[in-house]
Image (cartoon, rainbow, N blue to C red; front, side, top):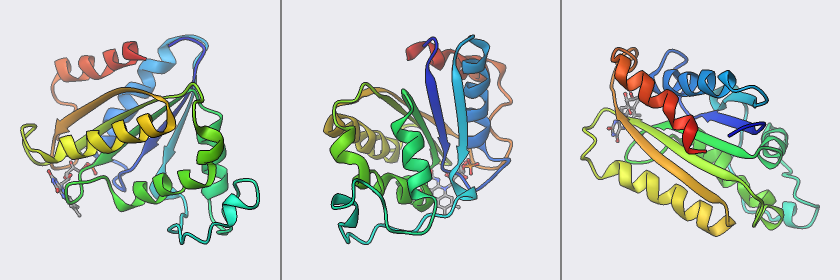
Length: 183
Ligand SMILES: Cc1cc2nc3c(=O)[nH]c(=O)nc-3n(C[C@H](O)[C@H](O)[C@H](O)COP(=O)(O)O)c2cc1C
């Protein structure tokens, strides 16, 4: 991707965690290419309330009535070409903190269909990569892309448990940097 606007959304609350480390590695790879604009969001540093299905957003041009960071973050989603999500596996799915944002896509979905956006998901769990949980997460993001008529670029999973587990293998670091080429 050249001259793209890339939004990276970290769903982990651990600021020294594996997911953030992987996403930061990929961010540095995107920044090596001149012209790319990259924004990195730690979802846990934002305030998001859960969607209550009041449907106000459907009557007021897509604004969430919650007095939180929903509208700010949804504007960032809308203005990005690429949205790269990353999340630890929490109980076979993405973190609740990340899901709070994903649910708020409801506010903007009438205007987001068919926009030329690309999404990808990186998931990190303690379980081995053969575990079915990673497929559950991939399926969710594939379905989101299909529903919104966006391009689903990849799902990539990593097995890591404690902070610092990921990043020791230089080959794995190179592999993450190369993921940029898929966009
Ligand atoms: C609440 C909670 C639930 C978890 N559930 C799972 C799980 O279902 N499957 C799994 O493989 N790992 C699970 N883990 C382990 C994390 O996915 C793992 O430690 C991961 O490396 C955390 O990512 P981070 O370092 O980016 O925060 C869970 C951890 C926590 C705290």
